[in-house]
Length: 95
Image (tube, rainbow, N blue to C red):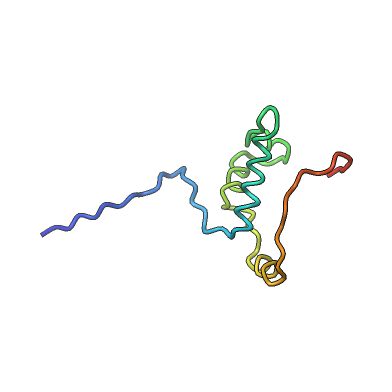
């Protein structure tokens, strides 16, 4: 007797991010929205060029495979009833 089990294996290029905190997810969603809002739309390659990093590094940041907020900071924010809010800079700000 044979038992056949169907397993879905992710493709090699699929995002393999660990579980992200809600704060991490909101930050990445805000970054993607800001990229979409630029005219013309800001590509990962254009963002990588601005940051002087590679496009795969930008993809890893957006997917949550890099640049996660430390859980201790998320716990601290939760304990104090705080959250991180992202908004466009005022027009006079330099970064």
